[in-house]
Amino acid sequence: MSTFKPLFSPNKAGSSHGRTPIQLPLKPPFLSAAIRDSMALSSWLLTGAVLQGLAIRAFGYYSLLPSALLVLLRATDHLLMTLGVTRNRYMDGVLRTKFSGQHPNATGTFPATPAAESILVFHLGARSNHPLGVLAPGMLELSNQARAMVENMTADMERYGVLGVSSYAKNEDAAGNEVLFLFYLRDYESLHRFVHDQLHMQGVAWWTKVVKDHPHLAIYHETYVVPKGHWENIYINSKPTGMGDTWFPVRDGEKGKEGGINELVRSPVDARSGALRSASKRLQMTWLEEAEKEQGELYDQTFTD
Image (cartoon, rainbow, N blue to C red; front, side):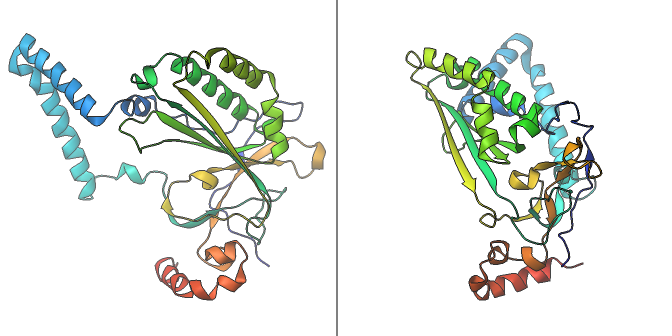
C-alpha cells in the first residue's frame, strides 16, 4: 500500500542530542493587526477625521497630499494585481491544490492510513471586557504573560510536545478584544508537563493576585484529547494553517531512540484521491461513502493532474 505524498521536503532542525532544544518554526502575530482590531471601525474613522482636521488647520490643504498619494498608490497596486499585471502577493505561500494535514510516523514518512496517531487540541484564550479594550488595566501584563508562555513552549517543542500554533481574533464584536491561541500537541502528558513548569506556575500566581481587582480580564482554555482515527481535515487553495501547519520532529533513524532530532517534517500531504478523498474516507466511516459520492466526483473534476 502506497503512502501519502508529502507536499514539503523535511526541514533541517540541527540536533537535540545533548538536550539542545528544538524550536518550533513560528510566525508571531502582527502587532499592527492587534492595534487595528483594538477599536471599532467608526472610532478609527473619527480619530482619523480629527487628526486630518488638525493637520489642515496647521498646514492648510497641502496636508491632504500625503494621504491622497498613499491612497492612490495602494489603489494602483491592488488594481495591477487584480488585472494580473503584477504578482498577486496574497497568493504567496498558498498551496494550490487539495491537501490534508496528517501525522507522519517515527521515520518521517507518511502512512497510508489517515489520522494514524492521536493528537491533543488545546485552546487558550483571553479577552478584555473593558471600555479601554486592550489598553485596560492589567491587559499589557496579561499579554506579556501569554506571549512568554507561548515562546517558552515553542522554544522546546520536543519537551512540550508542541506541533503547531495558530492565533485568531474573534470578530463577533465591534472591537477584536478577544484572542485565541490554537495549539496542536503530541499528547496530554506534554501539556501537563508545561502546566506544572515554573513559568506557568508564575503566571497562575500573578493571576490570583490581580483577578479580584481586574474583573474585566477574562481567560479560558479548552482541551480535547482526540484518539487516532477520529480526526480529519481538508484544505483547498489555502496557506498552511491549523493542523495543516504542524511540524513533527524526526530522530536520526540510524541511531534509533538514542539519536537526536535532525529534521522537522511538515504535515501537508496530497489529498486529491485515495484515503483522503472525502471526509468519510479520512475518518474511515465507509458506511457514509455513498452519500458523498456526488461531492467526491465534483472534487475529482477539479483536482486532476
